[in-house]
Amino acid sequence: MPLVKHEYPIMEYDTEKTAVLEPDRKTNFRLPSKCVYGFLGDYIKDYALEHNLEIIAEYRSMMKMNAVYKIVKDGKEIVLCSAPLGASASTAILDWLICHGVSEIIAIYRETKDMVNYRKSEGCAAVEMECSALASCARFRGAVFGQILFTQDSLADADMHDDRNWGADSFDKAVAIALEAVCRI
Image (cartoon, rainbow, N blue to C red; front, top):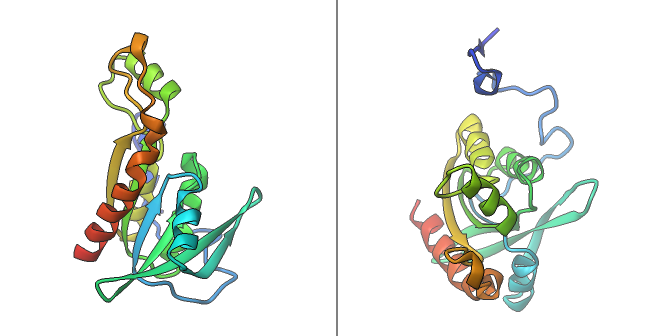
C-alpha cells in the first residue's frame, strides 16, 4: 500500500493514482489540453455569450450544471470554465477536466473579505481558499497548473474599505492574462 504517513494526519497522502471512483468513469470524450479556470461568478458565462463560444461539455453536480466552453486563441483550442467557490466543489470539477484531457491549467482566483480578516487575525499576510486544493489535484494527476491570484477589494485600511467593484473591473484583464499564459505553456 503506497500510503505516506506523517505525524500530522493532514500531511498524509496516498500515492496510488487510481481512485475508487474515477471522474471519467461514465463518459468517454477528450477536451482540449489547455484550460482557463476562473473563480469569477457569472463572468465566464457572460464572456462566453459575448464571444459566442461553443459549449463542448457539461459538468453536472448536485447544485448546478457547469458549462465547459471552447475558445481558440493564437490557433490553440482552450477550455474556458467557471470554478465554483469552495475547495471540494472546484477540485471535483478540476479533477473531471483533467481526466477528460485537460493538462495545462491557469486558474483565476479572488479572495473574500471574511477569510482575509480571519487569516489576518492569525498573523497571515496573504490567504487563499481553493488554490492549494487545485494545485494538489493537478499534481496528483500530473497536470501543469498555474494560478493568477488577485484581490476583489482592498482591506489595507479596515476603516476605509475599498470594494474596487468586487474585482469585476479586473475580470477582462485576468481572463486575457490567463489565456495568454496558458497559450505559452
